[in-house]
Image (cartoon, rainbow, N blue to C red; front, side, top):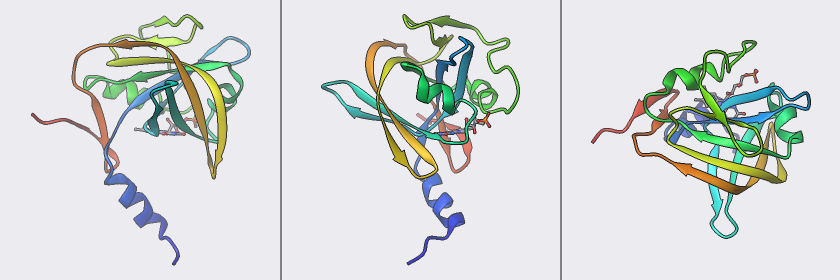
Length: 158
Ligand SMILES: Cc1cc2nc3c(=O)[nH]c(=O)nc-3n(C[C@H](O)[C@H](O)[C@H](O)COP(=O)(O)O)c2cc1C
């Protein structure tokens, strides 16, 4: 049975997710970041998470070479941040407020949660690579999450 690509995308779009911006640094020390919805918790002990990164993404070389990365979980008010960190060929950090993790990666202002990760494994995933991170530090804030569903942004209704 073959899989129709449009229907495959449509089915995947029925699975709502949160939205993150994954940050790291390239070898020259410049900040790198991209919008990522393919984020998942993996293990509590040890604390592990994964992100799936397209092999052609501009941030891919940095994410697969740097010793670690930060997962910034976006709040409902950060749709513009999600859009910005997926725009090609701009300085995504320009005008964006952030502080730095202990490894000096960007922690974006006003995010709902932060996971500072050390990269511990990579697995081939077709046109993506599955990057496994061990969580070394966390931060949590209250608020509503930004959601991604059927190709658009959404928010929880209460
Ligand atoms: C809501 C949303 C979710 C995304 N999720 C992922 C993802 O999980 N993995 C990934 O590799 N790219 C994901 N992307 C795409 C990258 O953010 C984007 O392709 C990339 O940053 C484009 O820039 P580049 O061409 O400079 O790599 C997502 C984009 C958006 C808008």
